[in-house]
Amino acid sequence: MLVVSGLTKRHPNAPRPIFRDLNFSVLAGQTVALVGESGVGKSTLLNCIAGLETAEAGSVQIAELNMMALAEAARAQLRARSIGFVFQAFHVLPTLTVAQNIAVPLLLTRVPVAQHALRVETLLDRVGIKDFGVRWPASLSGGELQRVAIARALVHQPQLILADEPTGNLDPRTADEVLSLLLERCREQNTAALIVTHSAQVAARCDRVLTLTPDGLQGLSA
Ligand SMILES: Nc1ncnc2c1ncn2[C@@H]1O[C@H](COP(=O)(O)OP(=O)(O)O)[C@@H](O)[C@H]1O
Ligand SMILES: [Mg+2]
Image (cartoon, rainbow, N blue to C red; front, side, top):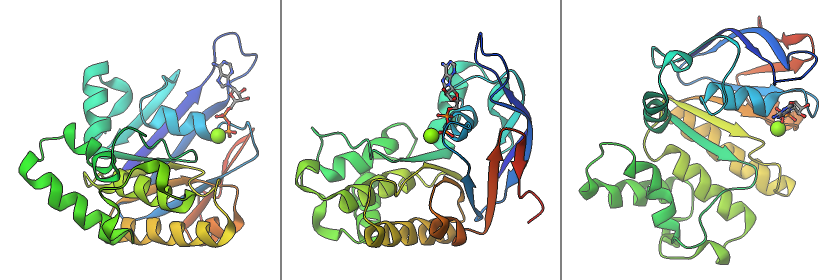
């Protein structure tokens, strides 16, 4: 589903690349934890995969398309159709209801508007906040907000989920519940997932663990 080949990223004026010649892939339905020290480049790697940052060399293949070779408009389209994002800080829009927040990715796809409400209702149920659609984000707890973010990331049935420390702002028990949901839904939808985490518990529950170090990726053969 995701194939990263020879990926090299260097910031302008930086003395050395953040990472060089990274090679790995994630299969459909596979969940992969990405761990590594703070500042090693995990978020940068996710941004490069999503086509939000450019890289100096290599390719990022998602659903058989090379993200890096596409023009900006086509990159945006591939991102909108094929990727779902979950961030540490939720990024839920405060002026939209919960249901409207979850529907946002559908606006960027060809899913007919008549089907949006049912899709949103189904996802609300699947992440355990069935009756929350009419509520405003300000009235939700952190764990509930992250459930909204997970529903929003999955509503357009993307092939790939990119999650950057999705449980980093939650207490351990809530974090565990929310992670379980994310992993279950990915496996159920046959969605590939790359999950950046500092938590050994989170990593242990993924199918595979990749460690990003200044010398490259470790754990590739596991
Ligand atoms: N625009 C930039 N110019 C130079 N260096 C940058 C820029 N953006 C990020 N970096 C550096 O890239 C490194 C990797 O950052 P990041 O991907 O956020 O790490 P992580 O997510 O693993 O904590 C950091 O050392 C950061 O300072
Ligand atoms: Mg980061």
